[in-house]
Amino acid sequence: VGGDVTATPESDDNEYLCPVTIGGQTLNLDFDSGSSDLWVFSTSTPSSEQQSHTIYNPAKSSTFKELNGFTWQISYGDGSGASGTVGTDTVTVGGLTVKNQAVELATAVSSEFVTDSANNGLLGLAWSNLNTVEPTQQQTFFANAGPQLQQNVFTADLRHDQPGSYDFGFIDTSKFQGNLNYVPVDNSQGFWQFTVDGYAVGDGATGGNSFSAIADTGTTLLLLDDNIVSDYYSQISSAQNSNSAGGFVFDCTEDVPDLTLQIGDYAAVVPGSLLNFSQNGDGTCFGGIQSDGGQGFAILGDVFLKAQFTVFDQGNVQLGFAPK
Ligand SMILES: NCc1ccc(-c2ccco2)nc1
Image 1 (tube, rainbow, N blue to C red):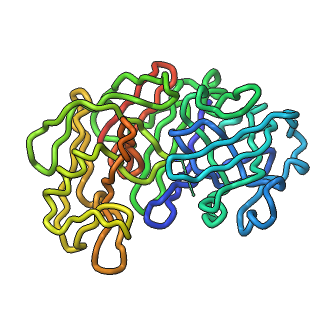
Image 2 (tube, rainbow, N blue to C red):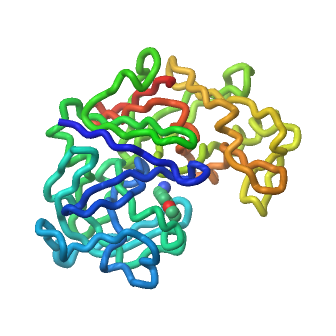
């Protein structure tokens, strides 16, 4: 048994939304391999915050069960957050069904979510030890689905300005070139965390120290150590760190170099075309590489994941990468 679901990019590839059916009601959710809560806009969300969102109404689901007294509260690296109550329901993603899945109903959401009307909640795909439900931590959709999957994996094929896909339970070899390159994962912090062994800017030599990184489908950009960020932008003559833009920008006419991350024997190339992320509207462009804020590990978000086919292997606690 498996599932295949389309991942549709919002404008500027800011996030990728996938249809999820909960108790017979379909909402577009943001699949996030950097967190472990499945939460939705619902009839419990204040009407002033519901705005034009699609909401889940548990009263209309014949399979919803309240988990009485259970609560959740989450805050994300971008400063957004949400909180609320919890129940269970039947959740289907791309034909794959999990019964009695914990579904977290938002009773409060931060302004970033209120104004992002396409995003009706998140489906967490990190490890269940990051789930925020109290008093009893809940399992993710992927953890619950594991036993029914032919292969205990999900894969991500995110694309620039076009629909991609997530597959659960199988690896579609038509979606990548060559062989998959696997790297061990340390899931002790709940992330898909692994070691990057070095980097190269453009066609320069691979160097630098090894560093820890997480594969995070719920982060838009490629967030790296400040030293690597400075080294990269030293190769773009007009690059500057702009407070008003919120990070490194450069003239849109510039030729933007590739970045290669050495992961074991695999050289993961992120093409310059993906590193010229978006236009600021004043002739400058915003870089796809930005600072990780010194939090001690790099965040390989959608900018990186668009350039790779990625296997999140729950059974063997490893990640697999291949070019597309
Ligand atoms: N990395 C988790 C995550 C995902 C989405 C969002 C978000 C905020 C507003 C719209 O979306 N925030 C954090």
